[in-house]
Length: 190
Image (cartoon, rainbow, N blue to C red; front, side, top):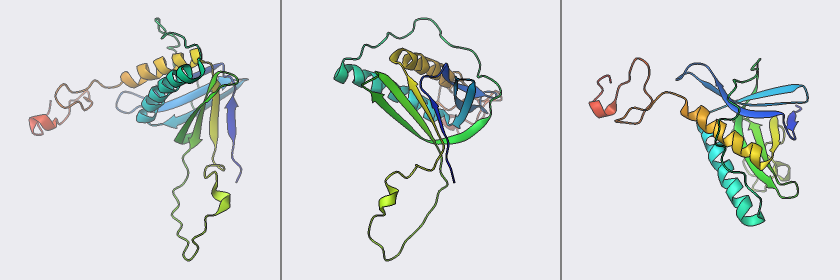
């Protein structure tokens, strides 16, 4: 089975966005460039962690390699909706991050979720040498960004994550428009 690598080095646009109303949103990473548009679905927590880890990666690149970091944008950058059509290429299972010192760019790789296989081989204790890269046959989206573009992506991703349902002031769980069963109120609607 062949796999596809969607490489954008660099993309014209790379953003995190959502489709659907709060509480029912589907999160996407979307890259556009060279007449191509690729959208991959992922979980809200993955978008949040991606933004957090990208910030840490930029800080570490500055500390270790002296990379000049742009300041956090003071104005709202790209706030446009996702480009249409939003066709899911695959659902992300693994995210990988790297910093390329030679080009001073951040590399983000989103790898498709593989099917969970539980193979048990009895009587063979040797490692299979062909399993060096377990995800080599999975589709992936690879994007290369400058530190400035990375910082802009981080800010947008944080806005997208925080634009959901407001949290309950008592328990912190998201409030639905019709309210929710708050554990701090012994199950009464709030």
